[in-house]
Length: 328
Figure 1 (cartoon, rainbow, N blue to C red):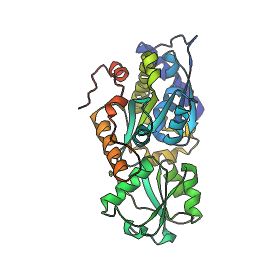
Figure 2 (spheres, one colour):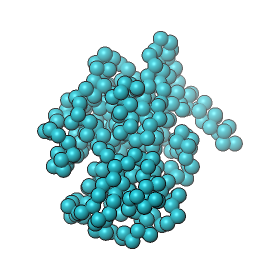
Figure 3 (cartoon, helix red, strand yellow):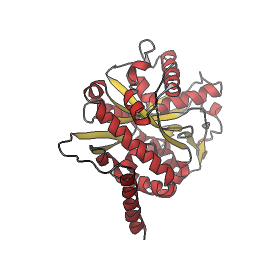
Figure 4 (tube, rainbow, N blue to C red):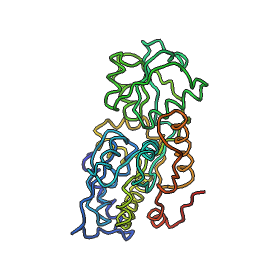
């Protein structure tokens, strides 16, 4: 029954986009486009666009390349292994102090509760102040690190004596279970995995709303200069995917869960925290500037505050949304 329903819904979706004048366009002689996509529910518009063949309908031959987090996705882009990448604004901020040859095309989702600061009941840590002298697992130069520091600042514990242990997303859970760290700053779906696989009760020390994470589509500057039409068509496919997701949330969760190889119940745990929409404007600009100042003040980067307007390419999104994108 589930498979039959999926096929029927896919046919309906195809008819819907055809009716809107979005019939499939010929994709012959189109370049092979590789997009590094972080394996998180934040990347849902890409999974849905692929499932509904919306990239193909825009005449694009797209391959989604899985990666564990925005840091890894961005590195794939900079190695030229892929043509586009998904990453948080924190990753873009850190990379902006190293290079000036990439751009952000759009944010496609935001969340104020995707990051968690987790510990285990058997560590006797009941509050942020109890992290004194402890080891905290974080993902270097990412939203994980910024979120953790934001929680410290919010609790007036900016200079708390503790040790950051830099790990990859896939290493965090085992480091916590194996007593190599006492707490971890992690995004979904790793937070849920910690909750479900721990033999001890998991305690969230974090604060909802302390940090509004966004996920963004990145590419190299010269690619946009060579073909802004490609970017427009990519964003158009994402716009259609988001519209379909908003109209069909249950089916969207089902397909995203399959794409991530996770249980649908796991996705329901955090789905309500995500706001899917295409944007690029002052909110993102202010957020990335704030994080850059934090990184400079904490000696995490070298150099002065970049001019982030130079990293934002708004023309493709303006065409897709049919409205002007401004930065003040």
